[in-house]
Length: 593
Image (cartoon, rainbow, N blue to C red; front, side, top):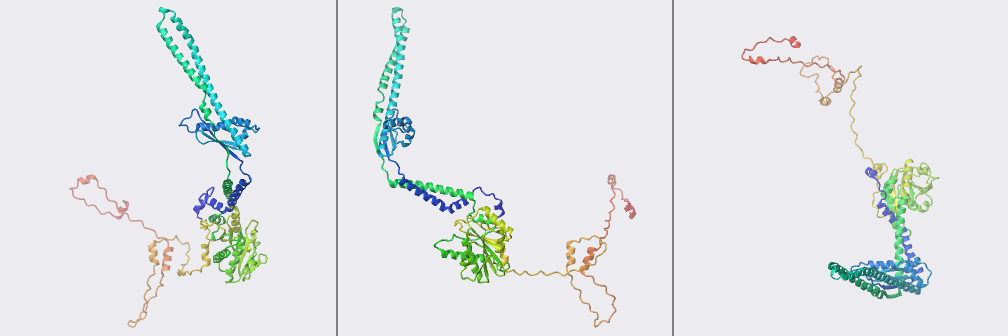
């Protein structure tokens, strides 16, 4: 796990972990789905649906039009589900059941704009048929009565309008008679206006009379057309269809309940199921994994795979001897068998012993006749030179101080989704406090579709790649030649400040010089001469040390150049005149300048 992954904020709900957790709890939601299926079948067998009667009613609407979208039929269905219709039907049945409860036993459905289907339930077939007939008659009577009441109200309104027009016509007739009695003195314009008004009122009165007569007739088409077109009948019931429907509903409900329960428990319990989560919480890499041990079949294949993992663990531990422990967390039998397989692998290289501190493991029975010594934790000596494999447990209630006697290093055998995050942190912290390094983690019963990386990129001292140097042979490194020590000059009293030489000058002085040629002291041809005393030769190292330690010399001030005499502008004007000769400048005069 890199530092970038550490700093990355974790989501509130990891969907990958949630899916894996639900898949691992497939027994739970499969069991709930099966229970729902069985419950649906039992309900269909033991609690059959009551008899149901069906009737169809043709409803004629006086205001029906081809553009109607079913509004009138929805209105009729709503009227059918009222307590007034239910009460009228109960009166015909002579029943004392409350209308509110009776409404739950029947329902209406508009098949078309003019056909209404009525469905009624009853305790017996006869009761269901009687209820359907009573409700149909009550609905038809209520519908026809409602239309007749509307027609009567319309007729009354028309007659009232006719009477009002007739009352207005009476004074107009009297005015016409009075005006005609005047003879020649009558006003023709007034008579014309009275005549037109009388004609208008007479027309209205005749119109109101005709419309009132039509309204009095009512709606015979509606009354005659609204009727039961399909008499009440009992619906045929299929036991297989009912059984299949109820079982399918129970299966769906049970599956949904199981999936919801599995998702909730996976979030609440907080048990890591992914390789990366287990390695991160334990602080060690996953070096091997084993499937869930089979109960009946494929035991030979599981034993072969376990032996391969044991050989991998033997190569992972150090080869110089010592002790290693296998600590169990939710896979007791696998841990015991894995420890025995590791001991058999190491038995061919030297003596090996098993320290049994795992309850209910039966290591002696698993070891059999193998050359393996099985000891209890109390009987095991503290100091032992042979190879030792300790087998213990890190379940809740573990004595942490006893883990040091099982092995200097440890391998954790952890079952997936067995412990929660808090306990994994406790195990890692306790092992770190006891200074017991974790070589790696062996996962038992992991998810087969989990391809997450269970390798930690931190903690090189506990990772397998950090143990490569301990297992492999050391590579010889050529020794660097040691330079001869330089002679140290005697210390001087009150040594002045050292003078720093340039790098090129120091390199040139350190460069080895060619050795002087030997001088022949007594040549054969030349006569022997008397030589003077030879001064001791100073080496390069002594010369370099003296130059470094010698006091700094005083720097001479740079020699000043005499200033150039100032030439005035008027001197340029006298350029034609001859140049004057000046006397030489003495050094004293130059210093004065």
